[in-house]
Structure formats: structure tokens, C-alpha cells
Image 1 (cartoon, rainbow, N blue to C red):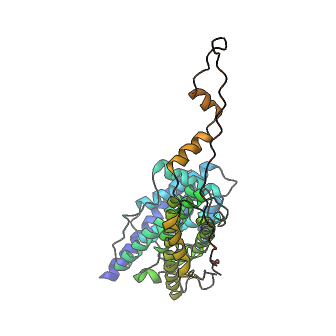
Image 2 (image 1 turned 180 degrees about the horizontal axis):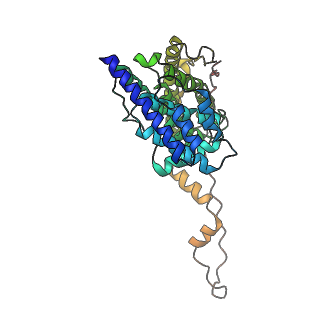
Image 3 (image 1 turned 120 degrees about the vertical axis):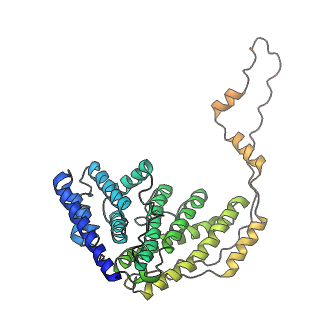
Length: 364
């Protein structure tokens, strides 16, 4: 009975794909693109043929009009929003993921713009295909995969660069930038680790194809975090307490996630994912280094409110001073000697004894 139900479901899926292709041939202004999208994201439970994905990417290259890119994104969004089939949803997400990695950045920019104007097209928290126990497992993985891709776009909004293309962005950032960028990268890594498969999804060939891309991107993300952490600890022992507390929390979270990433890699290796890739070797720093950071936080200088006020006064623009100072009396009335101008207030920064940093090297 179950086998018969599966056969009927596959027949209905094939019929839907055939009907959609026939409609595109007659009614679509983007006939070739629509046909390629349907064939690359059809109901067949195996990876899409490369030919159809390349046909889609041809409409997304740098020489195409932005209207073509926008149409492609809308077509993929419709495909995601209407389907209740795990294979269609997953193959559509793979097309989007590969386009982010392989085609002109205009696709990413248009996708970000679409998300701002129309809501998150990758919001699939409620997606489920309950046609079989395997489909249920696949649906859970698809939801996590969609969250990772959504976070990938969100991190770009925060970082202003694509970590996959420029993983060195955290190497020379100032303290303020690091305290903003490292949490965004940490959240992206959290979503990536959540893509660890369970149950039957571990052995599905389409999921394994998507997982191999996710595992590859983990190297760039973790490298950016490592560089950011090294930059952060170089600055740590000169920070005021508020920044030091935030930095310590970021550092502890990075240590925890490094361990979780090692577990993710072990799972990937058991299902033959990443064996040909150069995945990172995660090494934990000595516990004494974390203790030195915690000791510093307890005694770190506070950023005084008075200091902040004095700094504002000292750095205030001349026109602001003129606006807040009453006009002097007319010369013919004034008979008093001119009062000496007050000396400028010097900004006092507390001196902090520099602590030697322990060796903290990048993973090999």
C-alpha cells in the first residue's frame, strides 16, 4: 500500500512538472528561464541535471538586465512558496545557494533587495512534507538549510562583505567593528552547524550535495572568526570594562562553537562529506589564557560618565560653541579687562598595564 502511494505521488509530481513546462512554453515572456527553473527543481528525487542549472545561471550573468535577475528571483520565490514537496523545495534552495556562490554579485544584491521589499523568501519555518517518514526527516533538514541561507544574506547586511568571497574582513577591524561583526559571524556559524543531518536525511543524495557546499563554507566562516578573535585579544587588555565584558562573552562563545564545529565535521566524515576538502583542524587555546581574560575584566577600568561628557565638550564643533555662548556686550559699554580664555580640558585616559598575550595561533 505504501509503495503504491509513493508511485501515485511520483506520477502526480511528474504531471505537475509537465503541465508547468507546457504553460511556460505558451504564456511566458521568459520561456527558456521558466522551463529551466521547472526542470532544475522538479519532483524527481535525485540531483538536478547540471544543464538546467547552467541555463538558469546564463540569465543571471553580469551582462543581463537587472529585470531578468529580478524575474528569476520572483520565479524561484513562487516555486518555494507553492510547493509542499521536499525535493522541489530542496532543489530550489540549492539553485539559490549555488547562484550566491557562482554568479555575478548582482544576484545577491537583488535577493537582498527582494527580501527587504517582500519579506524573507527563504522563511520556511513551517515547511513540511509529511508524505512519508523519510520526507519528514528531509523537511527538518530543509528548514535548517533555509535558515542558514537566510542568515547568510543577513550577515552580508551587517558585514558589508561576503564572507565566502572575502574571509579576511575581520583582520584589521577596530574594536567597535569587531564587537558588531563577530556576533554576526557567530550567528551564521550557529545556523551552519544546525545543518548537521539526522536520521534518513544523512543518506539522501540531494541533501549530501547541499551539505557539501555548507561544509566548504564553514572553512571561510571559521577562518574569519579566528582572525577576528586574534584581532580582538590583541585589543582586549586595553579595553574599558563594558567592551571587555562583551569581548569575553564573544571569545567564550567562539570556543564553544569551535567544539561544535568539530562535531559537525565528524558527522560529515561518517557520511563521506568533505573528505576531499581541506576542513579546519580546531585547536583550543590553553585554559590559562581564558583565566587571564577573566581576571582582567574584574579589574578593567570603567568608562567614566564624566570622561564621556568632557570628551564631548572638548570635541564639540566651533559652530556649536558659538550657538551656546551668549553674544558679548557692545565694546563701548564694556570697561572690564578681558578675562583669560580657559585652558582646554585634556582628555584623561587611565593607563592599563599591558599583559603579555599567550600564543593563540590560527588552526592549520
